[in-house]
Amino acid sequence: MAKFLVLHGPNLNLLGQREPEVYGTTTLDEINESIRVRAESNGHQVTCFQSNAEHELVNRIQAASKDKTDFIIINPGAFTHTSIALRDAFLSVKVPFIEVHLSNVFAREEFRRKSYLSDIAFAVITGTGAIGYELALLAAERKLTKQ
Ligand code: DQA
Image (cartoon, rainbow, N blue to C red; front, side):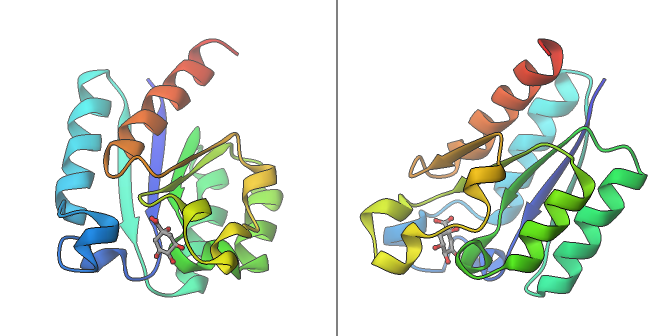
């Protein structure tokens, strides 16, 4: 049994209505539910958390090392491209993580190509839409069982 934390950054609470041509029509609740079903059916524990506030995401990453979270799946939203604080939090706790983006950040504006997290992530999944979270879960499970 592994313990997963799924973090969603700013504006992802609006999924389903926010720029559906870019981010799709699946809501955040639907994404969380599909991860939960998949993780729990494999005997894992999963906690999902969304915030528009950088410090709340930092606090959750810090808490992850204390509560023995095995793996974090995070879509940092726009903080991907700005947040040294999130980077430092991950470097501090050393909990492995996968960075997920619904859209292909490399096929969009130039500023979305810069990530403060990608080089310290276990993996990056970008452009596959909502299924990206499930792919991340699969990759994380595989990493945890084969390390
Ligand atoms: C995003 C991509 C980011 O550039 C953007 O700021 C988001 C969502 C994605 O899932 O495609 O909020 O992380």
